[in-house]
Image 1 (cartoon, rainbow, N blue to C red):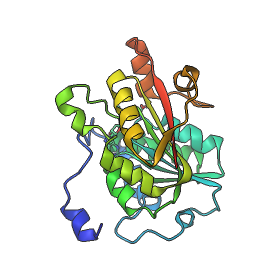
Image 2: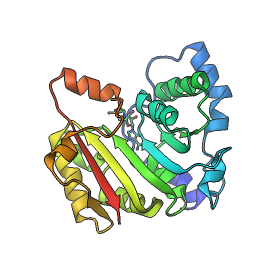
Image 3: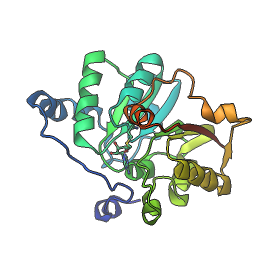
Image 4: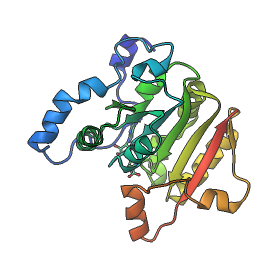
Amino acid sequence: MTDAERRSRASEAFFGRRKGKPLRERQAQHLQTLLPALKVDLSTPAPAELSTLYDFSPARIRLEIGFGGGEHLIHRALETPDTAFIGVEPFVNSMAKLVGRVEETGARNIRLYDDDATELLDWLPAASLDQIDLLYPDPWPKRKHWKRRFVSRVNLDRFARVLKPGGLFCFASDIDTYVNWTLMHCGAHPAFEWTAENAADWLTPYAGWPGTRYEAKARREGRKSAYLTFRRL
Ligand SMILES: C[S@@+](CC[C@H](N)C(=O)[O-])C[C@H]1O[C@@H](n2cnc3c(N)ncnc32)[C@H](O)[C@@H]1O
């Protein structure tokens, strides 16, 4: 996609709120002073080697779409310092919080994008990612809103382009109709295979799983989750 097309495109897959409560002064400062250095610049062409976005040579590169409170992203970044992460979140308050956590923890392996993930996906070089995490995406439970769900044929095409062969797409949700929807869409997509061998595989959280804020809310409200893993063929 060219820059002109990108500028003229309304947010394709983001339908949520961009702002919540007014930011505290320190958070606003973080966004102004720290985010620019961490933010992936889509106005310049992507580097042929995505690893050059980092000041070390990463063993793997992982994308998290819609990181919300950022608990999972920070946990994984600290747990695996040799992996590079890109976190995407258009909600300003969440981005401000995450940038603060990056500063507190000194994590060097995180880059960020603060708008619709489809824009970043179209910018990334082909076969540049080892893993995409889509954890508790906005569920859009009403049937008339299903078309807003992030999982769609067109976004799976995007995932297929940017994942390396053998790369993983991990999807967690507490909404049965969204889990079925994702199984159906990935099942129909020639580039993805579901890795599950038995029910335990999709009922058991991923290794080292720290939980997320949205998952805690689902539990409080009595909903269980499914943890799906698809392999890019
Ligand atoms: C239900 S919340 C889950 C947040 C977090 N992953 C968790 O489990 O707590 C979904 C998040 O996805 C973000 N989101 C929605 N559409 C998006 C898009 N097109 N690109 C990137 N993030 C998006 C929202 O702003 C929101 O923070």
